[in-house]
Image 1 (tube, chains in turn cyan, orange, purple):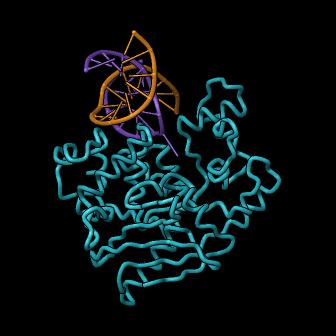
Image 2: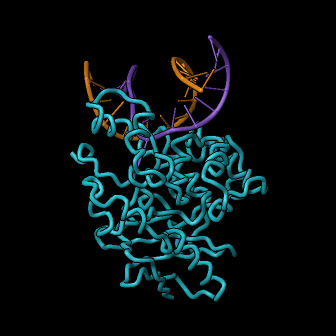
Length: 294
DNA sequence: GGTAGACCTGGACGC
DNA sequence: GCGTCCAGGTCTACC
């Protein structure tokens, strides 16, 4: 079955896919050579399907593995709209950054949407697995979590969906450590899964809350394993751009760009992007780091 | 409120 | 081969 969904213009599936490294993490699959981008999704009724995305003039088309009923179609439509940010509007941001050399062509390339997972739970796990490790380590850890705890796509042993909180909550820390080699991150992942599975933490409600950004950040920071960097990353995925994802890379880039390579602190990074106000997180995210490119 | 030091793991690097 | 270092941070104890 094929589903066509409209996006607020301008839209570029390529820009969403390449907005950060998420497209390279399971259960996303990105085949640049054959121009194929897909995701294995577990529906609320526990049915596992594959979604293959393709850009069309109005937005995106989604090829779904097998027939779906009306309820499933509505769920898929909502999930894809969230993942690709089809309803997001960056008009104000484009107007604000017009004329900034390091943010040129942002509107022409339809940049601004950041690829999301279907659930904030999945994005939180993945964000925790990016901390204090190389990117290759993140790929390995996400792979093994999906492989060990995800449900299989019917007819395929290799294609699996991202596990729901209950699937991980049911295990114990020793087993999780042995199966996944997540190291000290294991208790963080287990704790988060159990809090959500038990109903103590309604993480997904943050996707549609009216709470001020500071309150949302406090909730995110209350999760073990989520510090200032991880919280800023999740806030950007949620559509709040008030905080910067200040990691070791940010310190290196800003030091080179504005401080002659001298050692700096997060305060200097904040100062460097203060002028972009509530859009500063996105301005930092999309900044053209000539040093980094070299 | 600020800051060392420890933390799992696996890949890169030097010898 | 083997040992050491460290990577897109966070937590905790201590001051």
